[in-house]
Image (cartoon, rainbow, N blue to C red; front, side):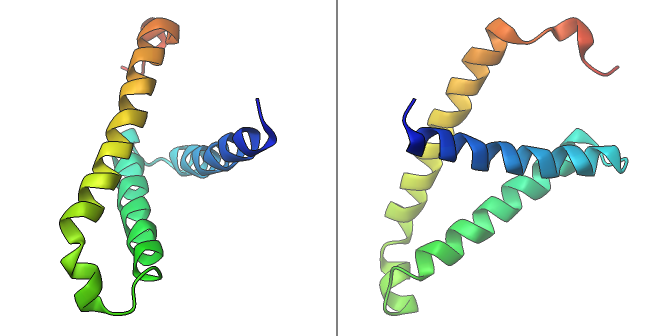
Length: 95
């Protein structure tokens, strides 16, 4: 793996560590997942705003922006669903 790939995966793992700490505080998987998705959308929107000179310019590209990020999320979700289908021990799921 390249150094960039390792750094990317390390950053992702840091987000998962935050999620696991929230679970330790008694939040549910659904609550933590929802706040992670919301936070990701909010941060992505901020990042997107920094690429445009005006709100009008950004909103003119809104559909393309949404399509890009939804597709990227879909690709990542599909990868992990396929991976976990093979590697996850479903007998250890919380009841």
